[in-house]
Image (cartoon, rainbow, N blue to C red; front, side, top):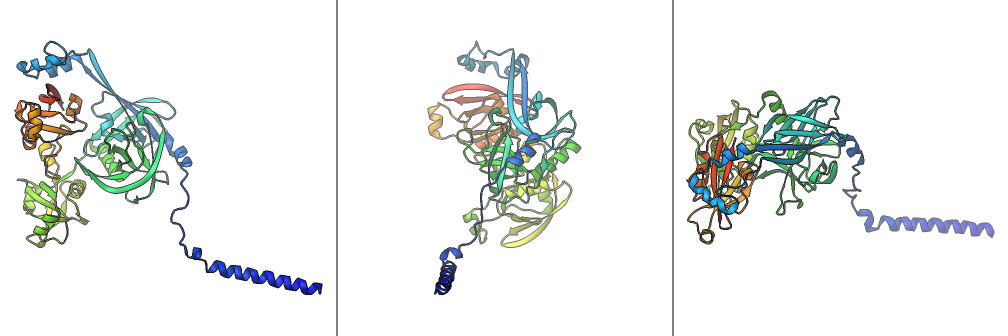
Length: 479
């Protein structure tokens, strides 16, 4: 009897196990797919390994009294009365010496002392200092800089330096984790992390850089620092933020490292960067334009003007052509075309696929060298509209009648954005109304673009602005 009870108990346990297994196998939870994301990354090893290659960059720019007086002498004497309300008898009081300082980041790309950073971090600096993680401070030489891509190459005299591992931005995927190391607000070796939000972003006035958009916290001082993937490879250079407050608001932009290293090789070899040039004015194709040209959807770059003597004219490109492909690259937005053209070496042939009168044609064009003339360089990208940017670092729009009436002005344009350049250095700010430039009246964005195109290559010119009803001349120092 005792043995019978034992057998019965074992049989009961086996049956319970079978029923439990059947219950589990039929449970809806067993049909749930495996999670695509498991856990959060640990960045500690990455920071320990790659952190020493990240540097802090500080610059000093000197401007003595004679330089400032020289700028003031460019202003017509009868206009100097406008300065009386800004402090001084006919002119502002000038300091004995003005010193401007800036902070940024960078990273070492070779053990013998080559350092990569942003052009705007070191632009027009008289002194550049690189501080390593071990607190050594080394004086840096500017090997070369490229304003279009915002890349600068520095060199310090040192050996056996820690070197950042350079990766490839081509393999970067949207949603991938990335990490930034830099010196926001001067706080050295600060680490922030996030994901890639988008790739191939085009920003106003930056026709040649397909930016990587991230949500990594980037602030003033992070500029020029590296953007790493989880393998500890540099995939970008932190360059810009989108902000209404001047600080981080969740949208940051980095220069792809593949493009940056191509710029580096040209700066090392030639000291400058050569880009391809097509010689057309283009604009975006919206839904209405697409319908009028017989396209199934908005795409391509619409040619609004072909410059005389340009490679495009020689190849037979005509106004009204819609460029839908450049070599093997499809053109969906007009902002994509300058990027691909700029990557082609001058003198090489390229194929354009255009839609003309509803038919698709293929044209062969010999790419030219992008001119140094700012007026021509602007025409390599999108046609400048009311908000078009210029070589001074300004974006402007037409002033409304109400705005002109409030300021008691007959004409002028409103400054909507001030980027790095002569205008910012002179003190022009967003919201100022620009009245004259180099003694030329500015009554429209088109007149502004023409005045900029007529500026001398170097020297100092005067600009009359109106700020909240107060007229003021500012001296703009050109290269």
